[in-house]
Length: 210
Image (tube, rainbow, N blue to C red; front, side, top):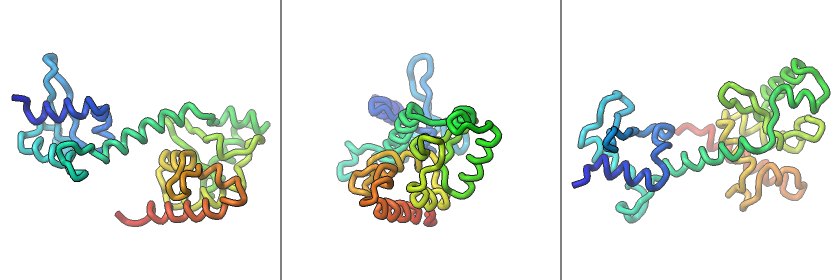
């Protein structure tokens, strides 16, 4: 008979979600030389008991009207964000040196501009494994911050929204905008105001105590 831990591990691997357990703050498992899954409690670092695994199983299947066929929504969300992060890293972005070349200024002057503008919540800056990245969508061809994005960026960044989540929201079709892409909608005078309103509403949700 398959153990609970083995059944959960098999299920998550088939869904392609096993690698995202840690990021979601959930217990993780590793397989031994015989391929048997061993689960670890993140709070103690100890092997999980049968009772803990039963509780984990119930929690992962708690969403939806048919628990036996439910998908762990929190894990799906983490996996989606991980996929989008990888996709975003393939889109144009600047570091200090490359943006300095576009602006025709020194690296030091460009670094100062980036951090000064970011401190005013007018520029989204991403930290990726110690490297500073400035997504290119928010800059003009001359390397200046887009004025039309300021009213959209400011509420999000002032609310301390996670920079990666802000980058995702700004560059993906948004439900609050009926499927429009926020950074593109901000450039259209006909949709600029509604884009700002959507950003303010999202910022209020981010800032609201959980």
